[in-house]
Image (spheres, rainbow, N blue to C red):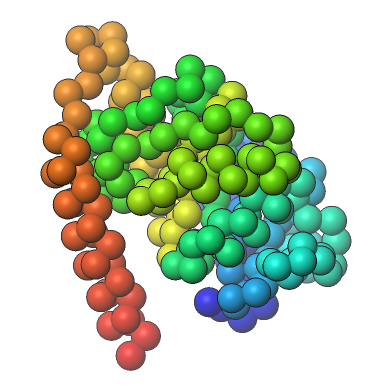
Length: 220
Ligand SMILES: [Zn+2]
């Protein structure tokens, strides 16, 4: 959780970071950060990240969807649903990055192809069944695909990553893109040989516990 001003600045910096790492292009994708249990800040609809300042971010009431300070991203309902259902989520990053979109177009489930992927994403990366963007059906399908995981793909659309803070959500988005790229490329040389599901699950649990201990230590 974070104050409103800090949330606005976090979104500006995260948007630039996504551009720099090539995960978003122009106005595509959207990011949000939780302010408290009932409030989030999100990027506005259809604006280029290069032109956004802290004052352009939109404050949204999570239960009602009521927005203050502009028109929120059209995918605001998806972000709200995630904060409501996943209390540990402090930030959400939605991208249309290339390799993740390729796997989403093929509607495949990515097994734990690398150990960093297993640690941060979980035992696999599922693709949520297709639904029109911005609808309640999309939110429900994505939440189902996210169970036990910190990321999901959206069929024929893109990727969604969450974290307990923005740094973790950005890291997750980068690991998703890398894992999808490796999954695709490995298919040309005989296919990826993933970790065993139980190993991947255990690595994810260890990483979550270790991370939360570090986060607690930092707050002291
Ligand atoms: Zn999208």
